[in-house]
Length: 180
Ligand SMILES: CC(C)(COP(=O)(O)OP(=O)(O)OC[C@H]1O[C@@H](n2cnc3c(N)ncnc32)[C@H](O)[C@@H]1OP(=O)(O)O)[C@@H](O)C(=O)NCCC(=O)NCCS
Image 1 (tube, rainbow, N blue to C red):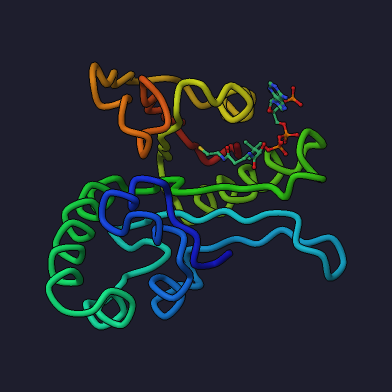
Image 2: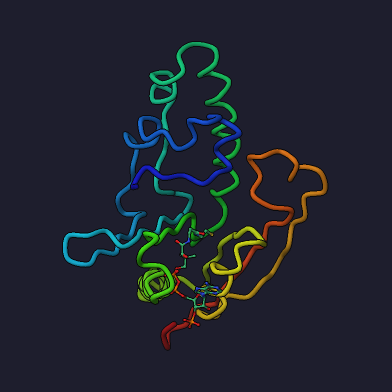
């Protein structure tokens, strides 16, 4: 779970984009929030802040899984994708609530906890990206005051099965000292 990554890394790692062996050695635990009920995991939220994200895969990590030239090419693609997150300030990279707990307020609670922690540290805005068809997630973010600032449409790219949708929505929320 701490080694989770968004589907965009399928471009670099193919069906191994979820492979914990690639991501688990470079986890930044201070870019991860966990929500638990007793000892049970309810969900998690990963984020970027100041150019540092929830994991930073090294070439050695990729080489151990793919070996040789394949690893070199995949690592370059990984670095190119990763760069897009660096300049985003406080950015919600990935959130997931365990299926049985969805629709009960856990996603909103976890996102609000993240926003509260940013607020307490004086961060003035937060952003995220979400696939247009993910209406549950969009509803969750809107209910916390996020607003849509950009919609990127993929004219042809959506035909590739690694792209989740025809459009990617960017949302932002201004934070202030009075709370979220
Ligand atoms: C998206 C996700 C994090 C939301 O968490 P959740 O616990 O299910 O949502 P919550 O119960 O906290 O609901 C928060 C808001 O979402 C909206 N929402 C929840 N379930 C919804 C549904 N089935 N349809 C539409 N909107 C819904 C509501 O606006 C709700 O606010 P309200 O209760 O004040 O009306 C969760 O469903 C999930 O993990 N989905 C799979 C992974 C994913 O898509 N992650 C987001 C990637 S950007």
